Image: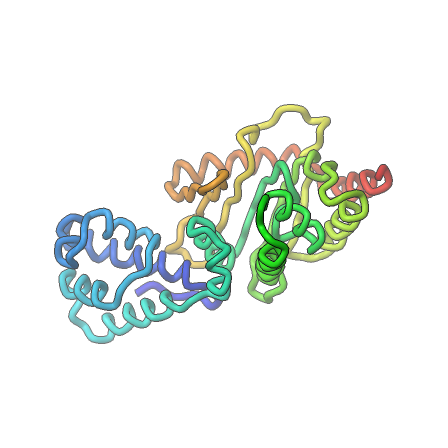
Length: 288
C-alpha cells in the first residue's frame, strides 16, 4: 500500500485513496461502469471517487475491495484506516459556510503541499497578505456582505497563512506582477505596510518572491494567474490551480501540468532576482 507521509491532510489522503482504488480496479481489468454498478452508483461516481473529488463511504470502499479481490485483512485494514483519516474534517471545515466547494479543495491541497509556485497579476498572493490588505481585498470583492462575515473571511485567510509557519510547511515561491504591487489596495498606508511585509517575508528560508517588471513587456503568462502545487507523496501528481470568477480548474494531466510548469520556469527566468525584488519593493515604498 502507499506510504503516507506525515502532514498529509484529508484532501491529499482522499486523492491517495482514490488512486489506490483505481489501480486495484485496473489490475482486475474492470471498467468504472462495472465498479459503479456494484456500489449502486454510476461510472461518473467511480470517476469522482478515484480522482478524490468526493468523500468516500465506508460501505462503498469495503464493497469495492471485495469486488477487486482484496481479501487479506491487513491490506483491507490499511485501506480502511486511510479512509478514516481521509474523512476527518480539516481545520477549514468550520468556515464551510464561507468557502465555495470548488475552493475547499484548494485549501486542502495547499495544506498538504510541499511546494507551491504561484503567479499573481492583480493582488499580492493570499498567503503573503497582511490582515489590513486582506480586509481591503475581501471588502472590495464582497458587495452586500456584512462586516461580521468579512471579518470571518479575513480570519480564514490569516488561518491559511499558518501553513508557512509549520516546520513541515511548503516552500512558497511567488512571481508577482509589478501591477499588483503598485495598485493602491486599501490606501497608501495599507499598501506601504503590505510591501514592507513582503520584505520581511523574504527573510524566511521557505519563501521566495520575484517580480515581473513592467519593463519586460509581454511574457509567457499573459493568460493570467495560476498556481502549481507539488506534494511529498510520490503517488500524488502535481496539480495546477486556475481560479475563475465563480469556479476553478484543477489540472493534473501530465501534459497540462508540464505546460504550466514550463510557463512558470520562463517567468522565473525573466523576473527579478531576490536582490532585485528587494530593490523594487523599496523603490515603490519610497515613491509612495
